[in-house]
Length: 636
Image (cartoon, rainbow, N blue to C red; front, side, top):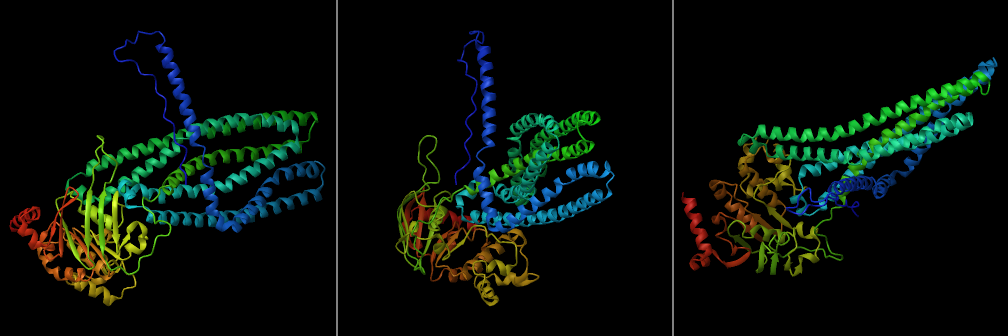
């Protein structure tokens, strides 16, 4: 999908030479005036561009409605019928006066009254059907859109979430879709019904009296000019309101997620002030739209009243002279209300349209986000992994070169082979490249140079699903989902039996604390596992990894949140977790990796040492230094 037309930079006034006097040229005032005029013209063009390029987005809405096209056509048919019934009263009123009342014809009057009643019943039935179908279609189309957005979010790369606030993403799938709901449910029906009504009224007015109709149409250029000004004025306003509400949602989500940190540092007042500032900005953005609406819509009402007075004077004068009938004047005035009502509704619809289009812009910006990594055409599906992992001259950097042109690599020239079923420990100081190594194994990123192979296959040549379905990752902080303890342990294997869940918990030493909970495995853990301690959450994360039976396991500082006593208790469980599968263990606590088959020491993104624990201790190199530092800290 292509993105919207980029906004050109706003021209700025010419810069004065440094040290030049403001009085050195008499043309400076003229130049400044011209520059300001250029700025205004550029701003006008920019706002006009923002209202263009939305055909693609409207086509996207049509695609959303396509699965329900049968009901869409039925909705339009009922809308057409309702519009016809709504147009009937004005001609019927003319007939009632001219053929019934003025001629004292009760029979004609009776038939006209019956026609009135029939048109009212038809209008009620058609409007009911149209309103029901509009809501039915709108709800299902928006449900499809939310699912499409969520599916797209699941496919986006990890890098997207590292640079985008979660609250802003949440705002797209909630607030913006809700704004679009108003456009679909109210806007589409209003657009077609009001347009048809306006067209029907114009024909009716011309049939009644061409001269009076022409007097009425004089107001159309004024209405068009007012609508044009409103369009220009509101081009930015509604987009800003979507951005402001997204900022509020993002800040709210972030603050609530970090409420313990806010409380621990006593920063409630500062956060309240910041939240108030964001709400002030949101209020100011919405007040722009309020001012525009307050200026525009009453002006339309005023113009409607003026035109009605003019028609009443001219039509009444002609009826007194006998140039036209009283029924024509009465019917014309009745129809005139239906002339300005759809114009007013279409004007109000433009407000809904602007808000909906601003929301749609944001939604399409999200849908235009492309995953950093995609499966190549013809990517192979991995069978059951043996677990052989190879790094061939691998280098990786997260971003572009720095401001001095230096390329900062997280990993550089890494060559390593890990045998199937082998446990390899990565050690090094913070920033040495350990977590980056693990991310490349999971193919959260592709290497900048070199290759990462699994069982001889370049990770770029295999499907991500077939790789990750056989991987287990236990991060530094065990993230738990809302639900029960059992639900979280079985996350990677939803079909696991209660016996398998309890066995996995028992294997990693989690069964002891689970048994002490009020409802055991059926205990609700709360959002992000907030009802449990950090160590308990980590034990559940170990059980979750074990029950999924991964062929490739990554433990990224997985015991950092577990105390020494708990760590010793789960050591046997860890050995069972690691047995028979290729494992990469990242740890600062070197006690957890002494039994690893291979220990790799990273420094500055390069491998500087590798070997077993005993070999590296005997070498008295960097690992020996790290081990000595850890031993001193543990003793303290």
